[in-house]
Length: 212
Image (tube, helix red, strand yellow):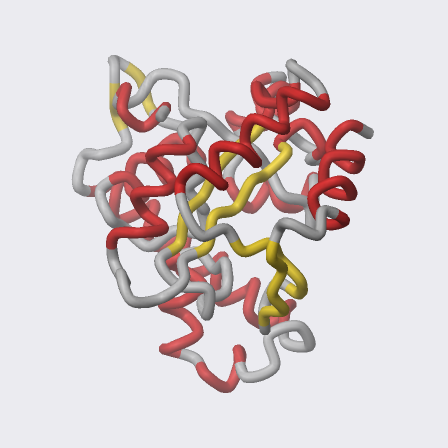
């Protein structure tokens, strides 16, 4: 409820510039860090606890979709399956699952599936592969506004970047659900349990900097 009130307040504020975008519809356009911090501080104005449930993601270009590296790779390799992404979703999901299964298999063959004295679950191993630059279906979000701003501003300095604020608490399946048992399942099993739902997952026992 507070998140909805916050967004309504921001979008109705005439002092805040809005722009229409190809991929995200109407969004707010902020011109400097001071404006960004003002908007971020408004989250706690509406609800002090809301900021605890926020995830941030920075992208260097407003022209990019929010796609994972694996999705971008498969789109380039199989243009026929991705030319109409929505209508071909079942076909594309099959390609993604096959790619992911082979990726996990290769990672385990190279000894990356064992960490801190135990075998890693699929989600944990994918997180590790993602951290070292591998192409997975995962999308990185950060608890840090500053980390996300760095990603939004560093790569393409002459273009408008994108800063995404995600209310994690509103997602259907968050870390609490996963920790109750879904983490130990394979990726295919998890998807079959909760198809078409976003999942929030935070590795608990991996590299400390991954938790930022």
